[in-house]
Length: 91
Image 1 (cartoon, rainbow, N blue to C red):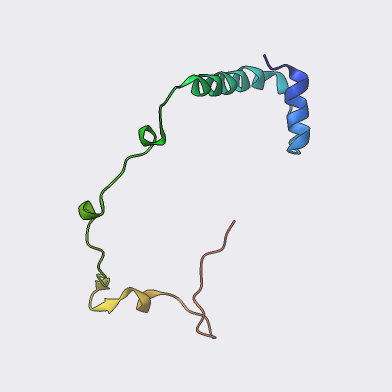
Image 2 (cartoon, rainbow, N blue to C red):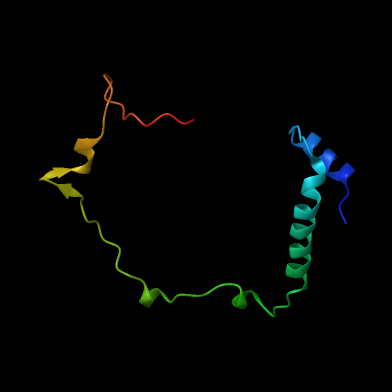
């Protein structure tokens, strides 16, 4: 069981000012209980955790150029005065 003091400590560690740390106790308990269930899952090998695909069943990898109105995709990219590609701002 998680208590309010532990939630406040976690908030301090990640530098978040929690107004009401008590409301997160139930949510954190649910998360921890789910991890306990995952820990109890038994499996015999890694084969149960992944699906293997044979090489012969893969699609052929081939280049298909993008054309719209006869123009390649590269022609639509905005460039600045030094011919660098401009990307949108990251917020």
